[in-house]
Image (cartoon, rainbow, N blue to C red):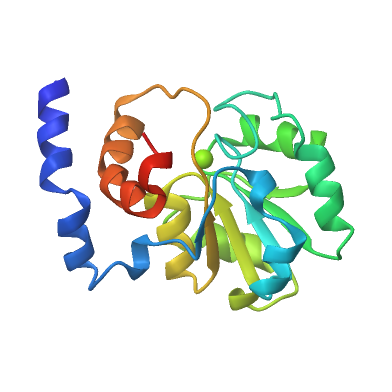
Length: 189
Ligand SMILES: [Mg+2]
């Protein structure tokens, strides 16, 4: 099973996907960062960002946990203080996303089916800005980054920091490897 998923991942590896999608653009974030805390006021000003659509699992919280990474709340306060709107958009279930969003005082969209545009459209309805002024922050190229591109939004890719379980996520991570190496170089192992 493991070798089969590895073969599938190899067949669909980034080089092929780059060509299929007509170059690297749709799979390349606007910026590649290490963690949420690298999204600074200066960066938001530089890219003309007025609103943020924020992923949850492995972006601001360990996967499927109600815990929050240290420093997230202070970071959110700083950004909200700039007048930037923030909405959570996650592919995870309501029972995971709703209580988490409530605990940090943010509006949210659950079961968003990223990279399909429906979730981002639902999230965008909660915001009052144009897509090009929205920054999608997330840890997955094939959901957050691809979805942002398809929705005409900017994107910040993060490095996942908590361990993950499940065959589908492992497959997606294998498919990401090549692109991440290009983006992060030695920083990404
Ligand atoms: Mg995530």
